[in-house]
Amino acid sequence: MSETPFDDDTLHEECGVFGIFDHPDAATLTVLGLHALQHRGQEATGIATYDGDDFHVHRASEMVGKAYGDPAVMEQLKGRIAIGHNRYSTTGETSTRNIQPLYADLAFGGFAIAHNGNLTNAHTLRTELVEQGALFQCTSDTEVIVHLMARSPQKHPVDKLIEALKQIEGAYSLIGLAGDRVIGVRDPHGIRPLVLGRLRAEQGKDSHVLASESCALDLIGAEFVRDIEPGELVVLDDDGVHSKRPFDAAPSKFCIFEYIYFARPDSQMDGKSVYEIRKNIGAELSREAPCEGADLVVPVPDSGVPAAIGYAQACGISFDLGIIRSHYIGRTFIQPTDAVRHLGVKMKHNANKALIEGKKVVLVDDSIVRGTTSKKIVEMIRQAGAAEVHMRISSPPSTHSCFYGIDTPSTEELLAHQKSVEEICDFIGADSLAYISLDGLYRAVGEAKRNNDLPQYCDACFTGDYAVALTDHDNHKAHEKVTDLRERQKR
Ligand code: SF4
Image (cartoon, rainbow, N blue to C red; front, side, top):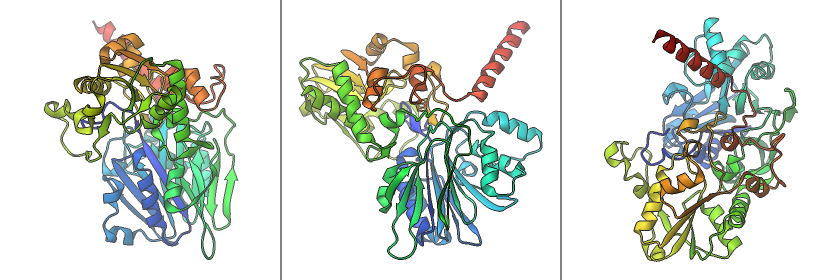
């Protein structure tokens, strides 16, 4: 989990990716695109450009605003083609060598790659590659793709990438830069998002853009063209956009948590407004778990806001900002020592006492991970004088860890894995607690209900129903069992 004291009780998106083909300000537009995707990763960022002869790469362990603030850095990022990446690290340590885009010289020339997701057999493949003599430069699992490409007998970069990806399991939305072309790919289940946009040129050719979310297109003035389909590979080059379907068809399993929390509310995903879906979730939650006689619906900012609006509108209770969030908490503001850890929640959130005093409050939040933050927020609202505090959560209980690109604690550490809803309610000190049901969530995203035989989305963190093989996880568990057996035999 994060090293900051203020956000270690929340889930983190791992990465955001961006790419643009053929624009005179390619690097600058990539900076802007990455800025719009900053919520998907704040620990490091990088851009790779190609100027027709050479590649140029800049990577830094900083947020976007700082990483590219030096004009000399931007000057160096020459060329009309660029890809970029924002990183929140979990797989692979946080060090400069792990910052993406990764770059390598392959048989066909230079290749840069930026990846959002998590490869569930990367460890297994890496071990095999190392045994065969591969020398890895970093600990990021994305480098496995580069090594597999290097070993592919195919000649064309796109064919090499396809051959490499056919050996990969897991979730990936990735963007590659291979000389005078940009390649975008979504894994066969389409777990992580990737969209295509077009930036109209006043003269000459339009530029094509790939991004994790449509909000990045909005910022640079590009129009949304469409989502890249699950299992689709697109090549952006001088002749336009070419689409391929190189993988066996697989059921679509888009991450339903993108709608609940990860994506920016102003993004469109799969043709749906994230903001509207969050409001729908709040409305469903209000129908499933009303709170009779409540005076106020208060969101836990910022991510709980749209669901709280939906909840309040559906039940006719007043929506009010009963918690004010400080926007000035730097990620490196203070070291996470035990002495200050307990201050974390108050540094970030403060109760609006004048509003809350004597009121029966419905708090709306998006999830409960370990429960420590929820407990402190409930306590803060009580200390501000609330008569009652009722917690409503716009996701089902988070009972399982994610292996597809979201940083979650281990399954065993998740509060909902250890405790029932009643026990969690006791733990956080609320007067009542309710989560949206799984079917309620599916209704909010536009389905009649969850198809239990073939769920329409990935919802594994609520169900344990993992859609993609967990090869490394299984190996890890098998290894644990063998080790445990050996330990017991020794005794
Ligand atoms: Fe999203 Fe949860 Fe699936 Fe991870 S396990 S991809 S967070 S729905």
